[in-house]
Every structure is written in structure tokens, then in C-alpha cells.
Length: 197
Image 1 (tube, rainbow, N blue to C red):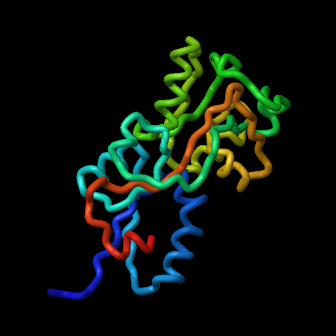
Image 2: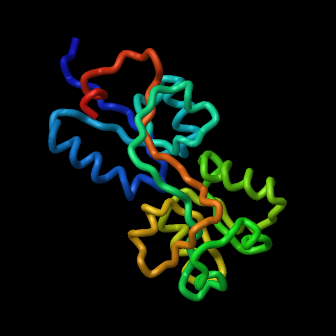
Image 3: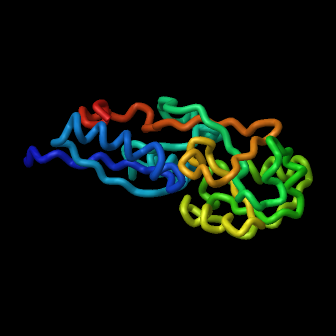
């Protein structure tokens, strides 16, 4: 039998892959250069399902999921969703907005397999708000490019928008808080590589 280590299969949401994950991965690779990692981008909902099906070893996910207790987990970051707009957007002078302020406004949401999408749509339904969902995207830079013209806004993690100081991050009132963490399958054998990660 080969002693060659199999790569850890890690699922990461596209929105987080460019923000939190590169630093984590770099630190891990510096400390354990012999370890290999295989990365795949999936929304949190799909990534959690793939962990439960043993198709991923670990996933970085939004922890606000109805079935998160079916997995073992570790919270890495407390964050919240903010409404991001260009400086010329009609809401750009606001410090905070309510969901009602988004009625009939053009917005971009995350892809359907994201927890953020589920949370936001639930809030829209609760308050009977009907924003105009222009697009559902998975890539941060796609969303940022769409809000440049001043008419469209998008929801991002507050930690993500720090990378783009030219845009306004408007707080939601009440806030939509979220935890970001790592999940793995309960009662699964944890390899040395997974423990190190």
C-alpha cells in the first residue's frame, strides 16, 4: 500500500474563497508542506450535504443552517450581512436600512445553494417585501462589478466589503448576523491531516 498522503477534500463557498480562505490555506501549507489539499467551490447547503455523503472531508460554511447540528463544527468568525452599493446609489447616504427599504429595488443575491439566499428570502417573505432580484451570483467580483453603475445593490459579508472601500456597506436593521465555520461529519475517523488543518 502506498504511503502517499491523499489530499484533504475541502469545500469552500465562492464568496468566502477569496477572503478568509487564502490566509488559512497559506498558514496550513507553510506549517505542513507535505500535506495536499483539494479545493472545490460549493455553496454552504451543498457543501454540508457533500460532507454528510463523504464526498468532502471538511467544508467552510455559513453556520446558520437548519441541519448544522448533524455535523461536528468549529466557528471561525462572527460576521453579518450588509447591503453594498456604489456611492451613487439612492441609498448610499444611509447608515442603516430595514428590509422594507428594499421593496421594488434592484438587488443581487447569492446562488440558490447558499444559506444567505435562504435567510434573505425568508426575511423578504416575512415582511412581504418584493425586491427585483436581477441576478443570483456565486462570484464576489461578479457582484461587485454589477453594483458599479449605482442602480443595483448586493448583500455581502461585512468582512468581504472591507476589500472594496470605494463601496458603501449599509447595515441592516435588525442585523442579519451569521457565523462562518468549518464542518466535518460526526463519528467519522479524523485523519492526522484533518486534525492539523
